[in-house]
Image 1 (cartoon, rainbow, N blue to C red):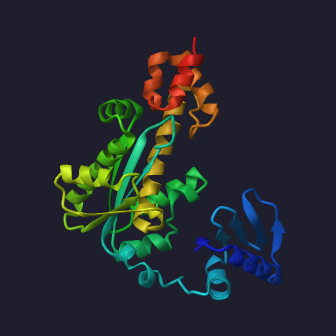
Image 2 (cartoon, rainbow, N blue to C red):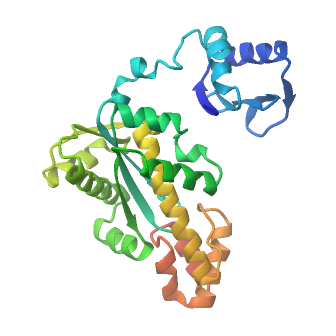
Image 3 (tube, rainbow, N blue to C red):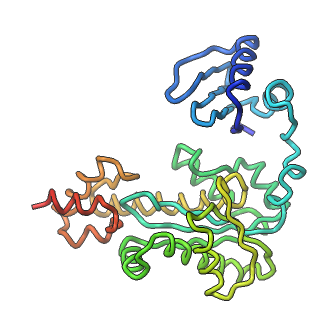
Length: 304
């Protein structure tokens, strides 16, 4: 284990800081943190939001076992995941998406089947929520590990912008379209693992939307939705496969169009969108962008 995140209280954060001082950690300024410290190859950051603690580097497992859990949290969880989270080790699908909030690029939905053996293998390999992974190289490495895991089943649905825009014009609602895509992935996974009893995904704004889409397909599987579902290994693995496909599409399309398509929906998006129109024409925007975003109206307003 080289990375671990845990929610803590403000009081626990203070106790942790005092402990790190005692243990000889060196402190440094770091954005968005209450404090950050390092000793050797082990770094510990306590973020304001939450608050939560992020432990990274060599010695992560030892610090959790001998310091964080007994001295700060007062509960032993490391190595007892199967006791505390039995549902994560039971057979189920994990579903997650990438690109939903990005103006450029596709919407990618991935699903992964896991059981106890697969989950333990993925945990040992360092599988975690893709949003916690900073480099594309590591995403690719972990995605390869997932695909090569014995007994695993997975399916990835990619909706390039052209197809995405067509579907959005039909659904007229992102949640309904997303529910359709999730259920399409579940349907494909059930062809591979027909007796899988349960599927888990992040909580939809309206839970009934996903259930309705499942009922419409006449699929028989328990549908579980919850916030922070990416803490589940199957969902985390799905998030990695989806992110890899999304980044791959962005890289290839940027190279082919000779324009770097930025991630997210930041201010740099406008200049990139204008560059696409100037170089390839107005019709080209719908081939690389999700046109229902408010950004599109800004692009048209500022284009000649």
